[in-house]
Length: 335
Ligand code: 2P0
Image (cartoon, rainbow, N blue to C red; front, top):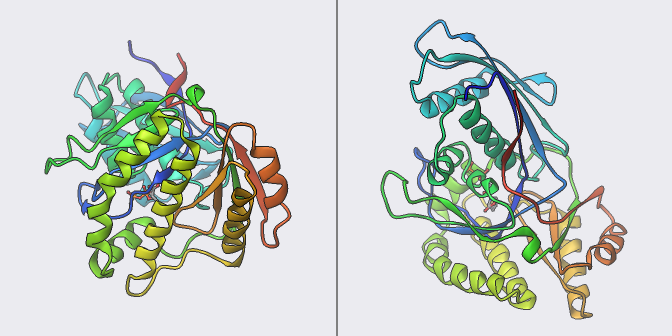
């Protein structure tokens, strides 16, 4: 059924076994698989309205608002290209107006591109009446942003590197539901400025110049298999060890690029030490850090309050966000 307006929602995700590097930059294919958790609380909400038929033979986006402000033409063109890749030629192509809001800071190392593209492709699938299957939607989300395919699902999610040149097997799939192991997440924001090097540029520089890149790729499948087992067994300590290992290995890899990528600040490091001290005292918590200075503390169920109280006192921590594990991307309203 054709809708005239839909609202799609998606949450950001955090990789525990990290994705860094592409095997094909043009198709945005990852060089390594990854394992993530989808968050609750933090959310992208995207409203897409369908107007009259487009003047030419393709889908046209005439308005794109990000948190109330018109987006740059470059982004609008990029999303329009994605909409036309999804378009199935089922009737006259429409004109679309897209209005998207995040209830958390955009481009501040909180994975807004993942929730943004997951909400977008889920919404486009509905408004364009496409009915793609899960692996096809995964592909469209991945074209937008490598980590976005993971936000299509809730809970614990695996993203396959895939072997096919066209990327048809580089897809996300669910591993364990959010309510099956309800971890707490505390995010310590240590800077609100945008990062200097985008993930895409940082990944390309790392692949081209870091001497550790072959070793990083070679070890990933072993880490993914071990972490998947730890998730299935709900073995917190095992998952903690593997996640911190993957995080520090990724940052070592990035630091060894030329010029080196250093995403941390002093407060980032202070948080890492504090989280290690908490864990040594028996608190169920471990850290992970992405391509930015924010620290994500992953806590065993019920440990979030104690961890937040300690991280909130650290010099340089500006704000804390709290989350649990959330659902995958979905259409929440349609008319
Ligand atoms: C991840 N990150 O697995 C890794 C860990 C950041 C560090 O995926 O170029 O926005 O759009 O594929 O997905 C962030 O990069 O990059 C990311 P593109 P993306 O979550």
